[in-house]
Length: 311
Length: 311
Image (cartoon, rainbow over all chains, first blue to last red; front, side, top):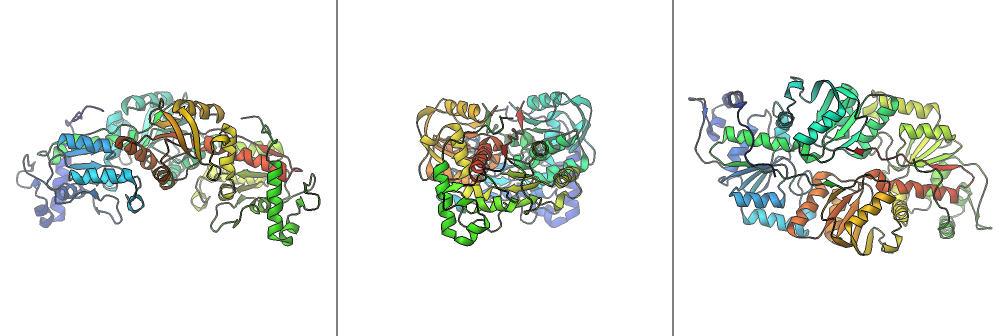
């Protein structure tokens, strides 16, 4: 575990608050009344008050034009939208251990980035007879815990909250393109130094790699998570980076493309960080957002740790 | 590279020959005439003769009832079915390096297990403007090389040719269930010993792991390749193994299920071998099959090596 509540809240407050203020103004009085969290008169965030699960979700979604998106996976996975929130945990996965930690913390709302029930849409029909699923849903129900997935919405935030979180944690914001922060321009840097920094800052034991680690790189395409082979490959094809850094791949897609590109003669390398390591800072971003926007609720970032070790 | 043509051809000849004999008898004279490779009179395989790409494919498919399956991915990815085969390479991926090796060997037919163009169906519309794809298809076309994917068919062979190949290579046939060879029953064995053997026999540097490596295991579910979270998870749920060994996972699926199952108290561990390492012996199986069934054609197993290293 990394220390709870350990993230700095020292930057970004004013601009984010102003952004939310503008959004609530733009969408009209009805929405402002339904989520009366921002005082237009004072321009200040309320320091006290209770919130339902739905009010917190709506407040986050309000920042993202078009949210909730059609067919979004950003739905409640357990619990009721009307539950009054006693505390929030942000994390990558609502693992059974994270749920137990939330119970210990007195938190009844878990905001995750990834699925709860082992598939992208959190379909559960196929798990009805599975005793791991049954144990988990019983645990959630018994403690009346709401789990909300914030995946599509946080990625569509401007800037993408996950990318912002991970670039902050890596200290790489200075290298990020202003409009497309997934594209970074470094001073010529050996790839082995890039690897060392990701391992140090993102709590990674091993990365998976294709390429030449002694080679200098300048242009980096950084796509946290598992964006899929098409996006990863088209990103390389169009942007022509020296290095793609991503969270997870399908081995028959991006890995083989990079291998072939190198055989053709292209100077391209690939670092696979692991899915959790690459997006966990998005949960830290969410903690910061909650501290700023619903400060009366105790919020805790619980690092769910990388699932896989290397042997 | 592992040594070419290095695999033993000393076992299985008679039973396989008999199986093919029975199949050609069952499907009738027409098919026997179209692929006149098995002499019913002598019960012997012809030692000479030329074959087209299609004839070799048909001969393999003939063993599997229902093949070719509707919507199969086992199609030609380049070249013509009417090409007369000068030599065959079996491999996991027709990488650019493997294609070059085939050219060096004078082989114009590559039998792969996995995609050639970086996606499961080998769709290429999205790659039309990609210079890696263009380089690769130009190389194949220039040298008139046929690439056939043998994925669905070899997995539907009885027994599954990939599973047979990898169990042979691991020396684990003795532990495999007679009807369901993906289920193995070991004498109580520490998982770390299982890991050590897979690394040694399958040329693996590191495996990814969840669990307790010092724990003894008895019942093992072994699913080479990337069978998908649903199959991997339902396999655990129904068979209740001590250990799942597989080639590749999506981290948000099987890894999280195993983590939750352990948190619940189940004694289950997970070894992720890597996709290529877990199925490469299927290409060795194919080499053996070719030696037995089209012995007049020079066939070579080219190990395409694991794509990813660990740093």
